[in-house]
Image (cartoon, rainbow, N blue to C red; front, side, top):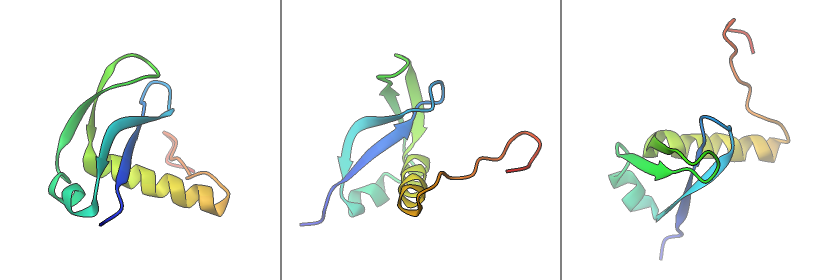
Length: 81
């Protein structure tokens, strides 16, 4: 049995990680790759539209940064890190 992946998103208002309440295995994640979800945010109380693909990629980058002991660099408006 394939392990389940828990899908989280980042609230655009508070920049906090929140669960979507959705669990997928790798095959069903691939099938939902281009799907957009509407999720209730526990941090700001609003409904956010999130892309499964973007949410997964954000999670992978966040996990990698945690393992490396630092944050993922964010581009500022000036284009500098």
